[in-house]
Amino acid sequence: MTDIAAASPSLDLADPATDPFAVADAAAAVIRERTGLETHDVALVLGSGWGQTGDLIGETLTEIDNTDVPGFGRAAVAGHSGTMRSVAIGDTGRRALVFGTRTHFYEGKGVRAVVHNVRTAAALGCRTIVLTNGCGGLREEWPPGTPVLIRDHINLTAHSPIEGANFVDLTDVYTPRLRDLAREVDAGLDEGVYVQFRGPHYETPAEVQMAKVIGGDLVGMSTSLEAIAARQSGMDVLGISLVTNPAAGISKTPLNHEEVLEAGRNAAQRCGKLLAAVVAKI
Image (cartoon, rainbow, N blue to C red; front, side):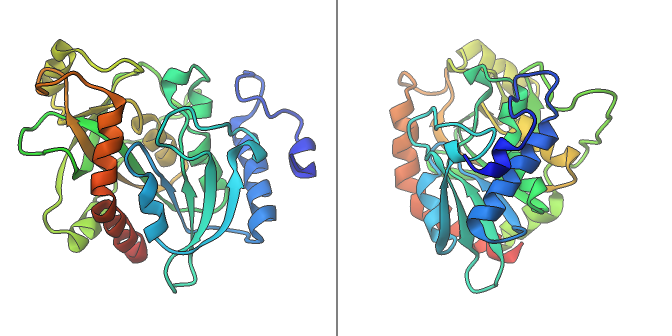
């Protein structure tokens, strides 16, 4: 840990007395020191199935272990990377901050830890964040390997990253302009509503049907809390889900994490090229 981190009065996000934005500032200071850059332009969070796609965005100029940065920890899920990277966005002169993993709500570390990546990106000057995930699909026309834009979400975690009387408008939490931009890259992209459950167990068939009745098209265990935190910080948000399996009750076989990883491997080139082209346009 650097002297910057050691100088912070409290880096424990689980401590209610800790200011989570101060921890994000401390994390940003370490990233600035390691990269030699004052700011980054775009942040990306690579969810299950998206791990290989970061390589196609551009050259990695700096790679940092999560454990060297205040508030971050090791990857807890197979298929995620325990590092963050500063990546050149082609030859544009701009830089992307790519998180190879995220903290999931089901890890029990609290909502502050879940959205710490978002707040760190905002502290580094990122005005746009791309949130990706692997998810279960509720539409039969979306086979495994299909990327889907997130139009909206339903947060079933019963939690929010926003503390106190801070009433953030979520009417356009997933920025319409960015969805339009993504469709300029791939006109065939469909969009849907993402439903976040707490996890870590997969949803039951009855829960999947409930999600469908209330307007959901995709089910998973991440993303919505991060999107809320991003909007609180004034960031534009692009959400993209990779359908890795039909959801419970729709799938004809039992669900398992290996099929999530396999779908990601099979779709890596398409998803990587999509992300690279979209990020170049942002």
